[in-house]
Amino acid sequence: MVVVSSSGISGAVKRSGPAQSSQPQIIKPRQKIQRDASTKLNIIIVGAGLGGVGAAIGLLLGGHDVTILESAPQIAEVGAGIQVLPNASRLLQEWGMKEALDRYSTAPSHVNMLGWKGNTITRMSTEDSAKLYPGTAYWDFHRANLHKCLVERAEELGAKLVVNSKVANVVAKEEGAQCFLKTVQSGKRIS
Image 1 (cartoon, rainbow, N blue to C red):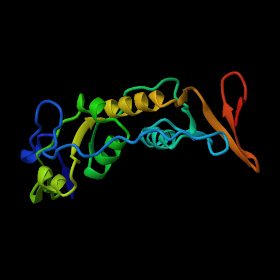
Image 2 (image 1 turned 180 degrees about the vertical axis):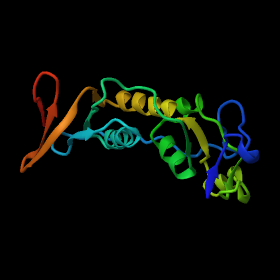
Image 3 (image 1 turned 30 degrees about the horizontal axis):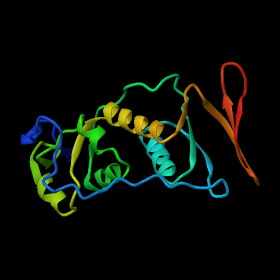
């Protein structure tokens, strides 16, 4: 089975301009929790992909300090299209990202499920589906644009992003963990 969204295949339609939900926005951005030193964690995330940066945003909003280690020498535009479903659009809005994402998003009108011969198995209206979850939407992005917005939000919240930092080993200790980085110069340690 093949899932096709707003790519233009089998009648999927891509609207021009920012994605708009027919629902009034009722999802309020979460405020960053302020913690004292006794409850604030110093967290290291290995990998600055969508998952790593997303985890960083959630932890930063929870009031913790986050360092993201990325082995690549720079954050680059990679990937293709990606569709965000209602549950994820809710989370992105709670992270305070709706305005930034509206610049890059489009809204598919429907999703087709196609058989391996190209025959339509079923079709779903994304607008009708999103109505079941007030304030949410289906959004389509180029992965690089979604990633850029996530990285910008993480840095805005205070994330420290360190590129060219390949983790060679992690050693757990009673007082915390220590990451050993494989770098051109030497094996730098971060805890």
